Image 1 (cartoon, helix red, strand yellow):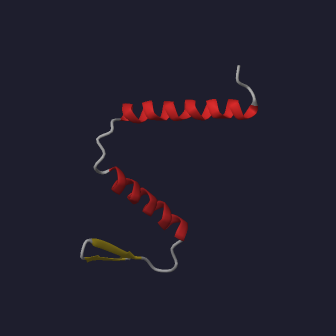
Image 2: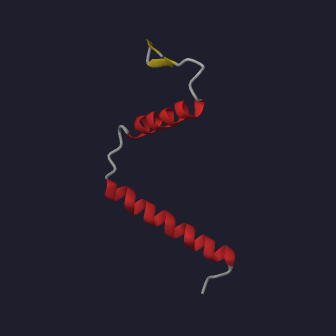
Length: 69
């Protein structure tokens, strides 16, 4: 593995023998860290948002299936 810094980027090179799916999982995690690094959301904020999203999805599903009252 080779790590290089160029301008505002960091380049990482792996040998071809490593499974790309394992590298992708690591890159996905690093992308998550990059996107959330400046977030001020609390765990409670995320829980509230998730509850709203799930409720909205369930209401749409009920409507699509004709289960509305």
